[in-house]
Amino acid sequence: MEKAIDINQANLKLLSGAVSVPEYDRSRVRAGIVHVGVGGFHRAHQGFYTDGLMRMGQAEQWGICGICLLERDKKMFDVLESQDGLYTLVIKDPERKERPAVLGAIVEYYLAPSCPRKVIAKMADPSVRIITLTITEGGYNFDAKDNHFKLDDPSVQWDISHPDQPRTVFGYLTAALKKRKAERLPLTIQSCDNIQKNGEVAHRMLAAYIGAAAPDLAEWVEGNVSFPNSMVDRITPVTTEADRAALEETYGVRDRWPVASEAFHQWVIEDDFRLGRPAWELMGAQFVEDVAPYEKMKIGLINGGHSLVGLTGYHKGYGYIDEVMGDPLFVKFLSRYMDREVTPTLDVITGIDLPGYKEQVVRRFSNYLIKDSVYRIIQESAAKIPKFILPTIRTSLEKGGAFRGCVTVVACWYQYLLNELEQGRFDKVDDQMSPLLAERIKAASASGPLEFLRTPSLFGDLAGARRFTDAFLDILDRLQREGIVAVIRHELAHAEAIDQA
Image (cartoon, rainbow, N blue to C red):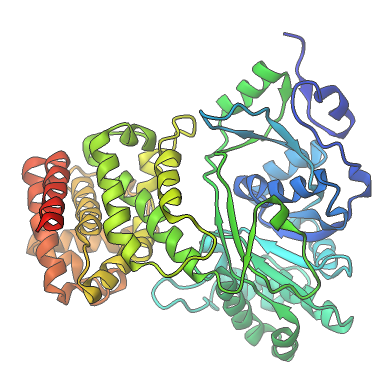
């Protein structure tokens, strides 16, 4: 093979024979969006939607200015700066043969710690009408116990004392909003993080910071800044050296930080933008008045389904989600969970073919090219299970519905933690709440499994729900005596007997 071609603006014509490249004039694109947190998901999702519009001849005024907020992001900053903001999206789908595409929606880029004043000025620029965020749940700086803003965080305290040299997103936004207030420039701040009611969370956390750092700004923000909720979905695995090598060897393209994703993508957004927005609906985004029913659907079917597949698959010894999905017994268990437990708890969801959506869940999880690890899904279960699994249990208890699939997830999580404790590996449990989990598992090991459920920060008052605790003990006992396959077979037989009664 001839020498691979580096990806940058000057080389786009040389690359066009091998991969899809932007044919629009990037020199004419102006940044109307500032995005904080340029990672893989942003590039595979919002960057994909916006580049797609530009390929349609739309959105010249909606280019993206990317902001790397943290010093540890310098590596990605250096890569994208050297590539003129260009990067390759490789869609991994066994059913669709697509050429990789070079995307060009990111037209400016800053490493915030190196130029804080420039970042503040950019956020306050009149051409910028939307600031979007993918800063992960931790970036919103709320206490998991009570969801309150952590005002005593050292970086937050630094920002309050050094408003022109901020370190957190709240310090940057507040400094920019002061300038926008002076110029009477409204703004939309849109979270694109995988958090329920993400716009409301962003609003609440920023308001708490402003209340302490710049109280005179609070009233203007309430009247001039919108925070639309959105629901985002696209499986985007971490970029690997194999991804880089495959792109270079197969297509002759040298991209130091490509991004891979599945073909599926979804974006549901509340249509509340103060100074206009891109026509993302032309790329398949759905604009709605209330995103909550769509979030509830995704949380139960996708996120909860992932936890079910990951935690049950762990106990069978599977390493990847697609391997679990290669076992018909586990697929049947997932489908039963979606149909009989989650679906009855959902609200009316306009514009969604629910049976088709659930079939798509099975196909997505079965994608062997994504190689999504079981271990990744098990990580941070202390944050996932209370949000993704327990709401279905609570609703089913209230309505008299089925919930034993959900309880199986809880039992599998408990047994996973117990295994790690007994084998002296608890320090390997990847969870921000691992100190609490270790304490509670040790207590349960001494006093019995129900002691684990008596953890209000995880389970609330569910330990007092006899139907739940009885099911938990029954499933856990069978898991410990006979293994996960016996559990699933018993639960499926039990469910079929109820259906036939």
